[in-house]
Length: 234
Picture 1 (cartoon, rainbow, N blue to C red):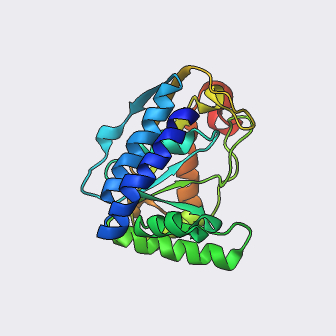
Picture 2 (picture 1 turned 90 degrees about the vertical axis):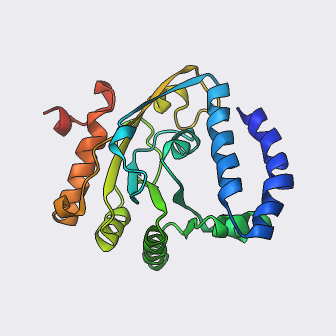
């Protein structure tokens, strides 16, 4: 997987980056990036099963909220999101000349951890992206789980949902904790299931805490029994 990506990156840089910078259109670079990300995961021996994508309307703009247990989660899940999606990325990456420019053209949102003001700015920037008709994908725990069980959720994504009124799609990634858990660099062969749950419409949000609980229950429900929370099992 890493060898494939190592070959893909310079080729992409030679072809897709100049085209993107010249045309100011990120579509070609995005398609190559998503294809390469998913192809690399599959070359590593990971089989991917999707559930529930038929629930999504390609004409609508969603906020996808997912669990996060492995470095495989982003390259595996993002290509499965219908249409185009933005994500929040470490603000340091935007300082690299070519990469930073491409990320800005792709409407990625810089985020600085442990900085409250920067977090508020990131939510506002993400709201602007959604209003452009671009999906937003967020790993709501904010970091990877060591044991595959859900960590506490960050509040920012739920502020974003209430501010924009975009429907929220809970997403469960089940299996990446087995094939490549946090702290491990070798990928085991195995199957990963990505479940897109029923969208939660703005009229059904309730309070921010209520929305958070709904998203948590949905994500938790599609995890393997040994990774579900005790409250969910009860």
